[in-house]
Image 1 (cartoon, one colour):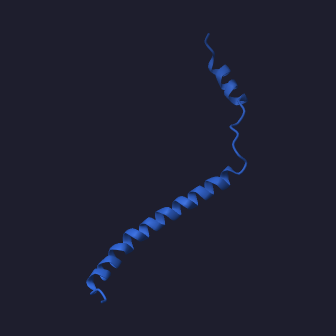
Image 2: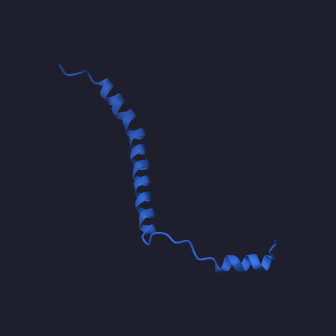
Image 3: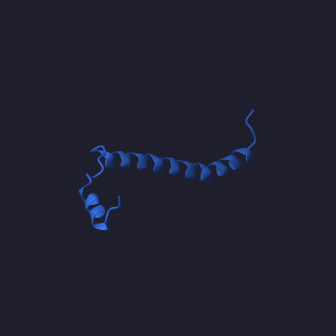
Length: 63
């Protein structure tokens, strides 16, 4: 059985839209903010940790 292009386009037009949770944009925003926080935290660690390590190693240890 074959369908014409008009029939298949009509079938697509009548298909119900995909349903998701009503707060999906809020969920996406929270996940994006969490990901941004992790990226910024790792960036700060990569930039600051070597500088702190070199300063710590250059000082003599207190007795």
